[in-house]
Image (cartoon, rainbow, N blue to C red; front, side, top):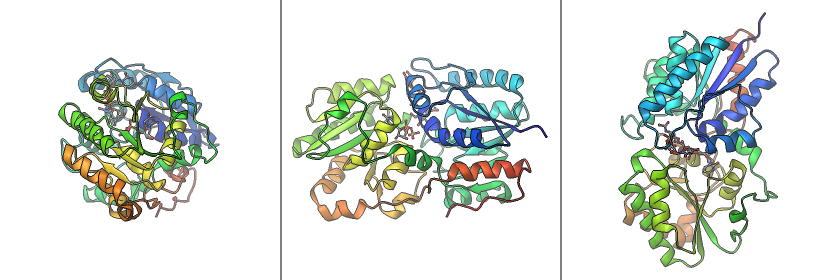
Length: 382
Ligand code: UD1
Ligand code: UDP
């Protein structure tokens, strides 16, 4: 029998980090053929991940434009993926999460009548514009997909409540924890020259990352002003912010925080540097989805600068707090963690609600089951 061709499609940094362990796992499976298509919705930030995980895409659509628009990305992905599908004729397309690459690639696969597997399926806020456009991207992808890989039970429940057949939903854990297992080590030496200079032992390092579309403009300025105020209150803290390459992030962050000696604005870090930086940080302030999953597993408190989250598991576990983007609230909540040891200790618990490092292996087992290459359904991540 011909081996099924599995085409993994992704375009941005977080998709790449979370798909990399799965691409490896598919390639290692003796009865599946692995092919990779990157849309390159991100360019430099994507290439950093491809380099580290040594993935050479079979197709690279190279679509990124400066200040690209959502419709612009959608059009280029639809057209580019259509050509790849016509040429390769894969048996299944895998997409990840909730980016515009994810939605447009799954739409192209549907138009070509190819099965779609949705990795990291079922995350929801049920608020159409928060996060924007991710909530609609992932809901639309759920409508198109044929097989679903949900990180957690709560994600599974969302899909079932939306009427998806439970038989095609697998609870797998999040592949980001698979990636984290391969990157973090106590002996790790940083590669980034600026990161090497930071005193992680003598100072309390606050890791910051923010880039969400709904935070562009006033919210990101408020975040910067809050950080500026926090460093005036504590001389033993250092802020490390690897700044997203979006010019709408770069401009305000560098303007407001660029000249402060306690603030280190770095280029985007390659993922090993990033994960090991997180593991040595004191706490994390972010609006990033991936960091909300990684930091709890490393026992780092996370203050989420958004008004809601599709990742309630670590909030319930007590390591993540949703604080919004109000300047005063950011200062108050961060100061509480910096000044009151019991508040810090309460949040600095290592919890793993998002995975155990075997998500990719469960996903491959589910794909093999889908193609009747095994009789055994994979056990769910609990
Ligand atoms: C995208 C995703 C978002 C995800 C985020 C992860 C969409 C609509 N948004 O948002 O869900 O959380 O990636 O980071 O899918 N740029 C570069 N080089 C890069 C990457 C970006 O210069 O390597 C600049 C470009 O000017 C680009 C801009 O950043 O136009 C915005 O990139 P885009 O992918 O549209 O939005 P993100 O905010 O990165
Ligand atoms: N990350 C990275 N280098 C950086 C900043 C983030 O490798 O300089 C990683 C981070 O550890 C996580 C992922 O990128 O795995 C998160 O991506 P991002 O915040 O861009 O997107 P989101 O998760 O919000 O969609």
